[in-house]
Amino acid sequence: MTKGEIAKRNFESGLNCAQAVLLAFKEEMGMDEMALKKLIIGFGGGFARQRYVCGAVSGMTMVLSYLKSDGEDKLACYTIVKDACEKVKQELGSIVCSELMQDSVNGKPKRPCGEICQIVADITSQYLK
Image 1 (cartoon, rainbow, N blue to C red):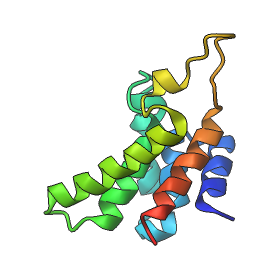
Image 2 (image 1 turned 90 degrees about the vertical axis):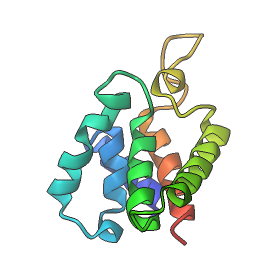
Image 3 (image 1 turned 60 degrees about the horizontal axis):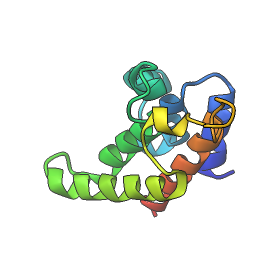
């Protein structure tokens, strides 16, 4: 099962988008599952359902920051996260929750959040190889 499939399953089981992506990488993070859930919960729905930066992207950012940085070199981490965000934008058109949720035809999301979680987690995986 891919990390994307795990993230989608996580979302469909009731986790928010940020939790779904972060917890797809719980083994790599080497942290307690409940600690990870608590750490990221407020990022769901684009920062507490305010529809700002997509929660799945926030989860991706946390994974990449933890696993790909030394905690000191901000620019190196920013470069990785920025590149990953660009890949998400290429795939989904935006990293902003409200934009991802717009649909001019019927008011429903262009892509369901589970699918977005899957795409973002799969993009995240590309940086961990």
